[in-house]
Length: 518
Ligand SMILES: *Cc1c(COP(=O)(O)O)cnc(C)c1O
Image 1 (cartoon, helix red, strand yellow):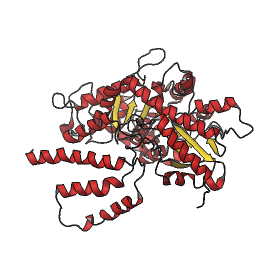
Image 2 (cartoon, rainbow, N blue to C red; image 1 turned 90 degrees about the horizontal axis):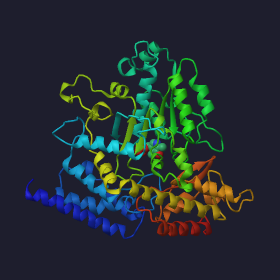
Image 3 (cartoon, protein in one colour; image 1 turned 180 degrees about the horizontal axis):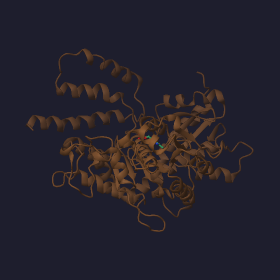
Image 4 (cartoon, helix red, strand yellow; image 1 turned 180 degrees about the vertical axis):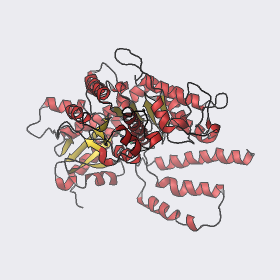
């Protein structure tokens, strides 16, 4: 690199930090309208621009015109939309290394690049951290099919693709599956007339994954336990469904339902029952633990986390597991992970056949390109590695407990407020039916998501919009039981319970007092 290339990169980072310092002084979660409008205009001439403006002018343009028009999800701890997470500084530093060295983590090349070894050790550390490597009886569980993905959607695609392969092969007279025969032939030869995905409040990406792998979003069947707890999986219904003649099933457990933050199962007994059914009727169990999986590191003997600790017990009995890193782990986009117990199944689906130049030496570390979607891959394991090294289990647990505390304090404020109503139960201190014990249970069942509404409908229809208009906190709109509702998801390492709570309660209090139509 010439001195000037080096200087350019060095100063580009200083300039970026300077710009970020300036825009974060206002502590806003959304850009001011005029900055957003300015940016949308400033980008318009690119398609017709015939001459390059050079790197200095380009950098200046990016920092001046585009950066101030981006949202504050990594700059503020009060961006509560979706479940986004933000980025720990050590993860950002690691991600800069990833960009600088631009490794293609596709083929395991011992002695040439340590990247695949870093990825594999990171995945092993995650298995350990999440206590997925053993059951309660200390029986060793192996997850040889492990890979860092682009996120939970990709991991769900992997899970359904592996599940689909397995449930057909296990019925095929020559143990062949769609990876070789194609879905139609494999099903016909195996006597499979239909494939169903059994779940409760499955994430929208599950239906998308079902569509991608050729099962169709229509194959996703909602087996909710009850109207009061739709996120819970009805195990009796699962038992009925998996026995259907000529139908093969994939069971998907929502371990952390995105709207409510509640869990589909409630303890090891539930998972043991599912495991027995799956073994008996040749079904596959996939866990979607995008943001719920981290409940596995909560303090085990603290009463206040007992509900979540129980809710994620037994998930090590699954065939495959989805987790996200860019959510609660607070690494940059885009990073998730996938664990599978059946390496042969996974390899048969994702192998690059007939590519001698891609063949790695036989080795304990799999070449990622033969067990995942992409061939060329970013070194997205490094920021996860850095977070695990830097924070350790203790640090991650402390961060997570701060998020949960913040969510519960907000939930408590809403419960106690005359106009706001905490969902999903609707318990409110002013409603006569509420008793103290139920209200405490609602708080104990709160994970990192709070869903609520204003009980006055003319306020409720505009609540999400009005909160976001303040630009002091950002929330997602959603619906519950057919009515509009608002959702707060706490997922940033920046969470500062006392400071953030002061802002959140001030915003909610003032909106509750202001007439909805100005
Ligand atoms: C966020 C989420 C997904 C999708 O994850 P991406 O990382 O956005 O691809 C899937 N399942 C659940 C439960 C989620 O919360």
